[in-house]
Image 1 (tube, helix red, strand yellow):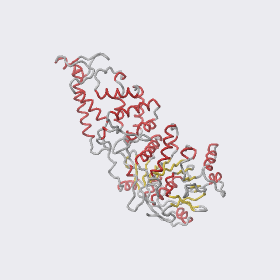
Image 2 (tube, rainbow, N blue to C red):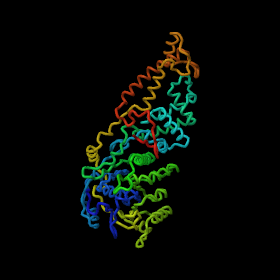
Image 3 (cartoon, one colour):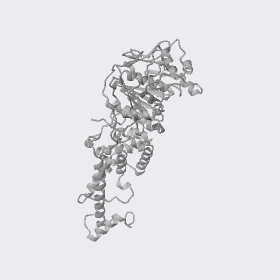
Image 4 (spheres, one colour):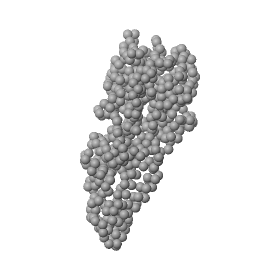
Amino acid sequence: MAMTAGDTDTQIFVGKGDVPAFLTLALANRHGLVTGATGTGKTVTLQVLAEAFSRAGVPVFAADIKGDLSGISAVGEAKEAVVKRAADMGLAYQPDEFATVFWDVFGEQGHPVRATVSEMGPLLLSRMMDLNDTQEGVLNIAFRAADDCGLPLVDMKDLRKILDSIVPANARGNGDEGAVPPVLAKLHQLAATYGNVAKPTVGAIQRQLLVLENQGGAKFFGEPALELKDFMRTDRDGRGLINILVADKLMENPRLYSTFLLWLLSELFEELPEVGDPAKPRLVFFFDEAHLLFTDAPKALLEKIEQVVRLIRSKGVGVYFVTQNPLDVPDKVLAQLGNRVQHALRAFTPRDQKAVTTAATTFRPNPKLDTARAITELGKGEALVSFLEGNGVPAMVERVMMRPPSARIGPITPEERKATMAASPVKGKYDQAIDSESAYEMLTKRMSDEAAEPGAPAGGAPAGGGVLDQIGGMLGTIFGTNRKRGERLSTGQVIAREITRSITGRVVGGVAADLGKKVGGSMGSSVGRAIVRGTLGGILRR
């Protein structure tokens, strides 16, 4: 295992004050917290920790809010201040670079990250769209009805089609209640079984979906869906791969950002097997701007977050929250974070003073240090640290200077980013979206097939009518009709309408299905099986 001066096989060197500060690898999955005001060095600390975990063979995932973290993929520069800080700690500065994969929900500055609508689930999707309780209930009905009818939800058009289809015919108010294909009748019956579905509620959800699409969220839903094993790689030297989520544009929609990261955590929780307490984590997950996760989160969601944070430790995953203020993290979650790095806080307001007091009281006291006072006096790059010791008890808080990163501090150039992506181990795997056959195509095809069957217009008039009546009805269907709203069609018009719908439906549905099919899609041939959703609405894949 490739290590550098200061590291050992069981610990990583983080900084030095009166004594060196080490983070024990076997306790790194007990989670952590990095806090401090803007400009105090949180991003550099995140880079230092990510580099150290990578050297120890631990893959890392981190969001890059400002673009500064991208420098971890480039060789460091031996600047005077960096070399001096390393020398003060007894280290010889060694410029280095780390194997990095860039990811981007929008597919612009990294490999696209996608999930299916089914994987996201109704709970997280409701939070993403800020739905109320009634709207969330209808969304749950849509998911359940799709499952019961074997209609996989992959992308936005699938969800839109299902939402439109569960509205009962007599609630549409379009005077077209006569002929309902059996598949729609089944969806209406299921929706009625699970609860009333009102057209205005579905309309409100559809409008929120439009907002999400306009914000670029539609690019996130589709295939090929992300395989988490691609996060958990090592390079040929045994170093952990560093996965950087390009989040500068994603941060324009904070709810989408926080829900996306929460979805990733839930997927890790559901898919990874139990490993107990390994010698080192299987993955370390840095959640930057963590306050966005907890802002306005309903009680039920906060309970689920607490549960995931508490239990994901046994999957070998360490979660490190990065935020400005320790008050941003709920107490029940804060209690799970054993490894702490506290940068400077400024006590200008009563809330700031409360934050300083809170931060000071969460550390194990050091009789040689006034913790509350030290928090306000820390310089850039300095921090108060307290890591878990061998028996799982927090060490006494120490004031240390954080070690300098080995890779570049600051962003890389667009040309360097392109070169890194060209050498990526997942190049070509996710770059091209695939529109596979799913709920939209399947439902369209089934409706057209059922409408084409003999005597298909369920609830319609018996077949019959003269030839002139049928020809007139067909022309009326194609070119329009002057009948009044709600006026019943003649027998010939009903038959002609259904024939025309069948023909056009087969053409559109067949073309869409042929273009969308692919072998081995993430839903594949499993449309008939039940979709089992876990703690936060992810899908338990087989």
